[in-house]
Amino acid sequence: MSLHTFGGYHGALCWIGISALVACDKPSLNPTTPSARAPEIRAYVTGDAAQTLAAGGRFVLAPPPPEIEGPLITPEQAGEFAVAFARKWGRFYAEDWSKERGSPVDPASLSADPRIFYAETSFGRVPDGFHPAFRRAYGPWYLVTLVQGGKPALLVAVSAYNTDLKIDAHGLLVHPMHSGNDFHAVGIAARTGTPGVRPITPEQAVEAVGRRTGARTQRTPDLHLLGKGQHPANAVWKLNLDQPVRVRVAGTERQVRTVFVGEGGRYYIPSSRQPTGYQGTGIRYDASGQRIGPDFLDVPAKPGGVLAFDEVTLDAPEA
Image (cartoon, rainbow, N blue to C red):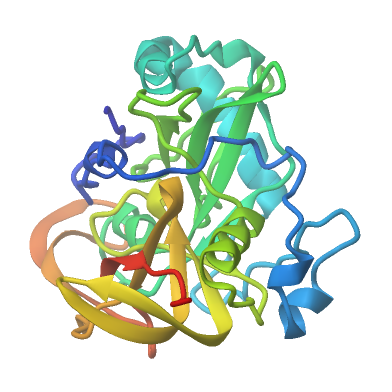
């Protein structure tokens, strides 16, 4: 699967491909657009989750958090940018997106599904003085589903820090001088056997865990990025449950009350050992925007943030 970093600077962060994840021979949920009818999950929610489940069977999700680390674009802007991005770059990558999807992608006919998901990062603030692509790479993202003919075609991850992007009179993107890590895109699988992603909605995540274990989700799900090197499309829904459930990882069994559900219907829990952040090399720039050169980069983890996950098997309760 091809994953593309868009913008002027391509070295800020090299995303690990997600083809290895979706190629695993494991059950996966059928790909659906967020506009599709939500599953009936009232039997699988309680507490705050039940209170935020609207009449149509969808959660009313919390808005992006206050701008602690700086201004964010809005979900509506993310949708507009995603459409403009597809129009600008589609002539170069439509063939790749079509292969990932398993069906032709026509960039000119794509439109944004109105339900746009905000994926929170567990990284803290990137130090000042580095190329802004690093800040976008370690920051939060919006996941925008672009639909074609009423069906999901392309998942576009839009950096929530894209406050310096613009759209011209022709509906095309205008990138800033110091661009990079602005977008990541991948085709949404139209059928089994294609290398594209299979996104999951919060309602599908709740239904999958509820049907499997009988546990109910008691807090409204929120979306979290998987950590360094992971494509934003791999973001996971955090489910806080009303009872312990049994998981198996690396040959051992554990009881947990928090499960993360991700692309393709995979289950995760936080790893027992968590990094304190990311330490490596970044590219430093001066106040005038001139390149200085490589320097040590230390991006801390947020307090309580999860940067490392273990994929687990979720066991059904014993009879």
